[in-house]
Length: 358
Ligand SMILES: *Cc1c(COP(=O)(O)O)cnc(C)c1O
Image 1 (cartoon, rainbow, N blue to C red):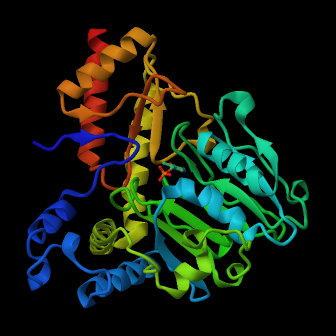
Image 2: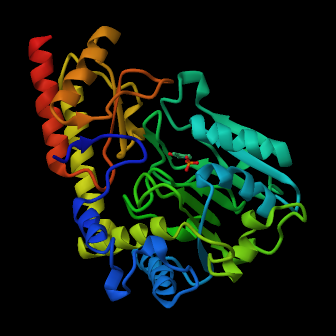
């Protein structure tokens, strides 16, 4: 039996995609082998690699002057790759710290370059996105780094900050393809696949062409965008199977109407859940309303004991991995693209039920 899996990552994949992958697991497309067994230099794999890129370009309307690569090491590896590749002119970068991952990105940047926190919401336990004005950024900074959706704290940007022309780098790990974004607003976008676009093991990097080719001479080759772009993500053995599943997810998303169609569903799912939380005198979400995430919804009941009971009871009803992150406590419902609307309905039903019995 499939459950509704509210895990923040790795997280649910569309059942239809899992079935398609299953159908090809022993003999992919008449090749007589699984993608897991296939040379990454073979024609069928090259086709998968090309198609994954083409679909991502189409779904996100990525302009031609941006390169797209599929790399390893997770979003965390990009915390190092970004300063080593593009923090190389003034060697200064400004970071907005809106949560745990944004802070880790800053800390890693600070190992290599002059990294500065220009704004932070740590003072209020990351329950909002700090307002910034263009004059807050150093004019000669090589980039400004933000995290669009804060997976642990459940906040998100509603629009990218105005950096007065300083290139904007954005961690989109937990919201990529959940809503439309204007790629042109960013010089670099990266996202680990395991939240919204596939299994763990592959990370998407979308980088404006004029940002590459200026990597630090000490930058390891695996982190170098120029080499990965030149090799079309096949510099060494890539995570073939993960990239293949990403390709199937993208294909499926296109069949479902693309990003604007899934955005409507996501907006409806999130609204239902927040509306119920707000209408109840039992559950609470502490994020300032304008900044509430559409993907990760943290909430608490009146006590830690009740939270524990809630999580246990939820699992018994097939609503799993809903325990909050240890930094926040309580519960967190991650409702990425692959979470069906019925899953959110089932959660709200359970919340009502639990409240009436508590
Ligand atoms: C999960 C997550 C990360 C870390 O991703 P890894 O692939 O595990 O390195 C970084 N940033 C955000 C916003 C995330 O949600």
